[in-house]
Amino acid sequence: MYFDIFIFLSLTILIIVSTLGYGLIFCNKIFLKSRYINLPFKGIFGIFFLYIISSLTHLVLPHNHIHNSLLLFFGITFFIISFEKKIIEKKQLKIIFIIFICLFNGFLISKTNEDFPYYHLPNSLQFATHKLEFGLGNLNHGFKHFSSIFIINSIFYLPYVDIYLFNITNFMLQIFFFSGLVILLKNKDLNNFTKALSSFALITFLVKFYRLSEYGADYLGQFLVLLSFIFVTIAFSKKKIKFNEKKELFLISNILIFFAATTKFLYIIYFLIPIIFIYLYKIEDIYKFILDKNFLIVSIFSISSIIFFNFTSTGCLIYPVTFTCFTNTINWSIPEDVVNSLNLHYKTWSKAGIGAGYGLENQTEYISGINWIENWFRKYFFTKVSDFMLVVASVLIVFILYFKQNFRIQNKLNFNIKASKISYLTIIIIFFVWFFNFPTLRYAGYTIVFLTLILPLAIFFAKRINFNDKSIMRKIHILLIVGIFIFNIQNIKRLNKELNLTIDEHHNFSNFPFYWVDNVDYEKIFIENKNFYKVTSKKACWNVPATCLKDVTNLKIERKNNYIFYTK
Image (cartoon, rainbow, N blue to C red; front, side):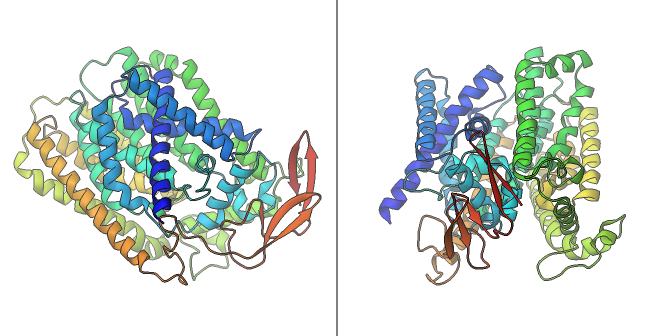
């Protein structure tokens, strides 16, 4: 066990260092010397750069131990070179290390996300052990779902640990997001509105999103969207912003949304956020930013990659939107009736029409118009949404009571109040788009609900508190310590429960520090000279070797130009 802990901890640190190395390369190329992109945020862009690299290599190579070890090595090398050239700020690196220690309890999990055995793990393992294959959605329902997170996970398939670091992507997001906000709040050039919003986000998300197993493929995109909005608000400053800095803020906020969209395509609705720049910047400047070479490369790659991988697995450009599917022209496309059925299923589920232990016969009638709203409030709002709103409200009350004595009407505001109100109007529009189409917190909901509730209070605080005041920053640091304490208390309670589970119980920690994996019975079968592993029970695939099958009925395999196509 001690050796496992040593390997687990060592590889975790090396992966974080390597990711920072890739982030330094990406940001130095795209943003040059930005004063807004601190080291942790470069780590987030490092994750994005790894997605770009792994997407390209997956076209011709499996992400096996050799591929991933080389990728890890090069990232570490880039980091060391940057460190020796004194490109890295040691104080920022120290903050990352402190946050890493403070959040490490959350990384020790035995219970994974509920969708992990269903499609997160099988997809990640498929990418790790096979190069690109077409029509995977015909093999297993879980293969119909694509997210950039799965390809990123696959590059952490490393010797000895194999699948047991597939959750490190979300852990790195935690570290980089929270440490990045801590450093951002120290930047005296930022306006009060940005700092108020960042303070609320730091404490609320730290207290609420402490359970890493819940992140799955849903939270990373939401964190990115929130960060994108924060960068937009930096442009609200009344200080004169240089042309290059305007360009950087435009690129940063848009690239973060592009990255979010690769995790789940529905995050595309958040492109309304960067539209705020139309009010802030000259149209001719925005035109120049859009035509910037780096912006075009990143934006085109991001959108085309999510469309491409959806297409290769399902035959649909945007799964499960029926009119984007080539069901009549491509033989490995998912049948139209299956796409229609699943599309209806997802819409009904998002509107609380179906769930664990309940369902509907007439789903089409239920989701039409506003028929679903009453049931949604009863089944979903007064459980999930109200709980989240309670967390946000509690944080707001703490802030109001704690900072009440510091309230002073600022005679000279350092931010554009009209821009902040326009941004809130934009958020309200996005909220209604979300609410009437897919009103579940997992589907981009946490961030939009948070911003809808918090922005009026952020404006209120920004008008009354000077966030550059040392006494104010000390108070925020105290709240941060309290938030970290709550984060750790919750995770210690969870760990204690998981460590006390017997070896016969699901999600036990007998394999500490690695998460629990179910023992699934399967058989090795050959179909047209291709190895498959068919689950012989009703369980999910879990870590059944790739490629995992649930049903082999009518399965056919074609080989073209050294690529495999699955049809039914």
